[in-house]
Length: 160
Image 1 (cartoon, rainbow, N blue to C red):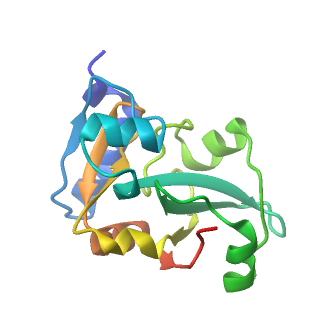
Image 2: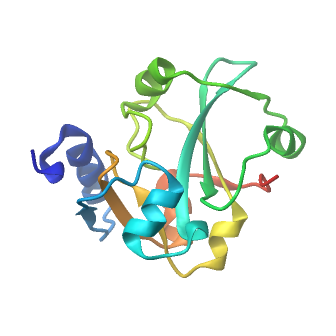
């Protein structure tokens, strides 16, 4: 199946159209499941990959999305100090239920529920970054400002 015809990618494309975002979802022949794989496939720095990680808010049991630079490890303790939100692990079923996407292809927006979203300020170092677009084979190039707008997100120091 052509990746652009998957329901997940179609949902991302529909969201972009609704938001009047002129971004193009690209289908790749190699997987972008990890930041390292994505960077190798795209020929960019690993830090330029905007990896989407879903956590569980321990107080509310809601999903929280953290979009981090591919070169960084996320410090949940730093996020707790900065925001007051205590993050716990989220299993694959929780992630799918809250986002509508499978791990490895989670975009920073177009989820089935509204997610509180935190962005890694290290992504601002780049003119553009690459994010998943619904599957491990679909990506889009986006500016940090457009990422912030479309994800309705906050910039939070979160790297270890």
